[in-house]
Amino acid sequence: MVDTRKDGAFGDLLPSSEHSIVVVLVEPGDARNIGAVARAMSNLAVDDLRLVSPRAFDVTMAKGVACWGGDVIDNSRRFQSLQDAVSDCHEVVGFASDSSGHRVPQASLEEWAKTLSNEGRRTIALVFGSEDNGLSKADFPLCQYLIRIPSSGSNRSYNLAQSVLLALYQIRTRAHQYVGGSDVEWTTSAHVEELTTMVLKVAEGVGFLNEHSPTHISDLLRNMTRRGKFSAKELKLLTGLFGMIRKKL
Image 1 (cartoon, rainbow, N blue to C red):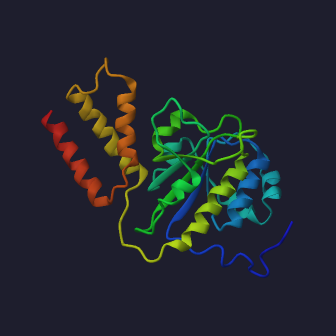
Image 2: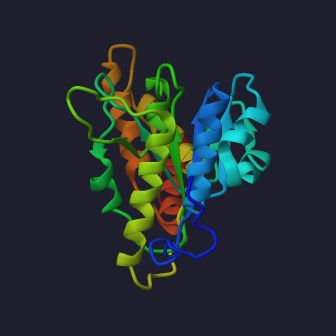
Image 3: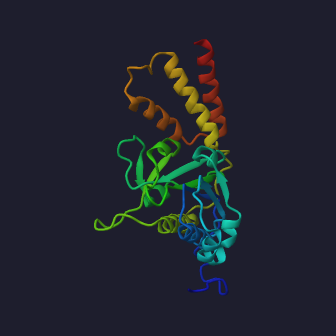
């Protein structure tokens, strides 16, 4: 184990970011994995860990694996659902090896990192599924992006802590490429979910969605609204528009 705290060897590698990064673990249960994730977060100056319906785990063991990242575990928060865990986040990014069967755009980690900019401070949630089954397809609609981390054909699976470490490192090493930025107020996941619900209700009200509609149509409508990086003003305009349509119906 190498202690990098004394000489600041990584100081130049980790520039400050305009964004606040959140790590969300869905149904984690292995204390060693949770501890390793906390250690990776501490290594890369991220301290907001959120656990969705975690199974019982040995906190002492987790903190032992976390080394100097024990505070990340102490300060972690627990939620009953992923929707609640990311309600205050402006961008939700899910990590999944395969998104087949659900129409959510998938990109490589590097491709997604290139979309980052400093256009206003945002809270970005990185969502990882359980150690056993990965991220559930039921959680895909809450994500603006689904990310895969390329690996060799002979071993396609990373463990949980490896995935978190690679994602955070990619974000930190790209941060220095952006200078300045505009003062844009971005919308949260909860606000976008309100618009999504309204769009679907309007689609049902005009008969565009009905009992004969293929299921992928509602998926596509939901994905369109979730992917949009709306400013607060833009979302207010769209919500007002669809609200008026609903009243007319």
